Length: 262
Image (cartoon, rainbow, N blue to C red):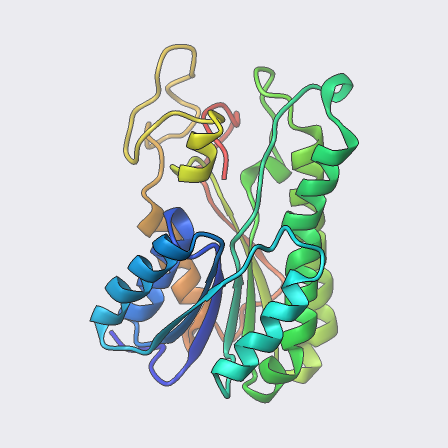
């Protein structure tokens, strides 16, 4: 399949986990890539492996936690490639704590990573996206519309609700310019960064453990990253040319938000 041949995609957080899976799906479909990630070693390994699909893959090491990093990174992207057909805002962060224990710094960090950075990257890359009549894909989370009594999520859920609202608003604003804006709200997907922070502890395909309702997701398991990545590759393709302003739930029909985080 080469339905993305001749296009260039910019993907954040692309050195591991879901971001890497999305980059792999795009490369398999023929897209050239610009990968943004913080860990230089992982980024280079990802770049080398993905280039094996026969497309051009460039890596850009950037710490998007820095206040001016997003805009600076966009300038570097435009110095690396003449075109940007798709921006995938995948990088994000999650901290779960009760309201009384959530610090302002923690809230601000999530707001910055999950909302401000996608906004600034879209803003800075907009001229290229308009020229290519491209698309913006914002990776959100099912935590924008669900909750779990065992995992307080007010601050995190607020940022995911915000990116969903921004996705719909930008779709309306940018549609006349030929730019589509969509979102994906994954359910339980193994996320290495979250596992390191001990927010989740599971592997792809792992069934529900003790304390989790077996009917929380009808498939009875966590998602595989490639299952979400396939949705991203579709949304970036001409086959989704009439799809904008939507948040696609790829969550195993989650009904209780019990298992994990994206």
